[in-house]
Length: 375
View 1 (spheres, one colour):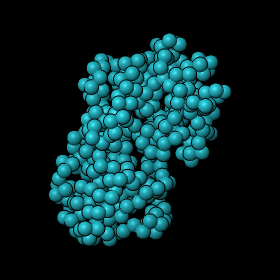
View 2 (tube, one colour):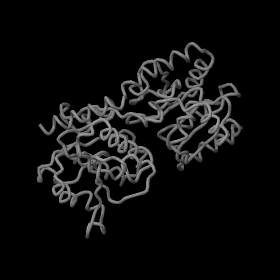
View 3 (tube, rainbow, N blue to C red):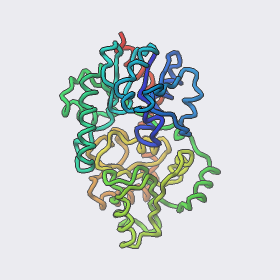
């Protein structure tokens, strides 16, 4: 098969949709090498996480040329059809919630991945103009795509509910995490990151953009009810919401126990996970929750919030709390760190649950879906 991908996020985004795009492309390239994969992006970048993609023999890249370079957004949403047809693309996969217009007119089958509908569930987190754009793009993509992939049962239900899509048109294919989380980082690497970031001896970890929806402030509030020798380390891009977190930290004398880090490279993250006592993820709503998978692979117990898809990601042996209950979060943390047998069971069962997100299994599921659509 000759498969085309919307690779804008793969080239432009360092987290989230970019990670998903690179994951799918790399995964298919490795485990289904007999096919040809073509990446279509508005512009090239020197993103370090693109190294594997650039080295793969079965992956080629395509960027706008001629007059299309002047308006790359128009090329991506419409004029890309000329390049897809010229390159004999049989199926086009929109990896980030959208598709170019007119694929059916040129006889190219299509798949779109819808990651979440948080902008409809929690509209207050989004600017009205952004919500309008997201809605139009997703409505079109879900209507025109031959098939829709969602990354969780939660998102599948939302797509069917909000857009009235036939359930037979929607498949769940999970996303795994970067392979660097699949094996021990090693004691030397863990010592290195402890020294590099000044990590405390005992800490619980949170990873993700520091935005209101992800609810890091709840974990900070829970620190007031947890033993003072336990710290909180949060890793992620800062936003305006981070000011609220810093204000609470300052007003409650938590400066020495809460540590916020931005710009941490992927190469250091597995060791940071493995150095932690447990992972806390009290997000109000997620499309899936990759950091939870990273924690399970890293052998770290998880405490997450109920209300979205995190039970799918964390499995039956993680702990779950209401996303507005800091006392429940504190109680869960205390139970885990005070009971070695419980902690070991959570680690063992978490690793077993993580097998659901095996790279080869997910690659095979995706390629089987492509075959089904083309046949």
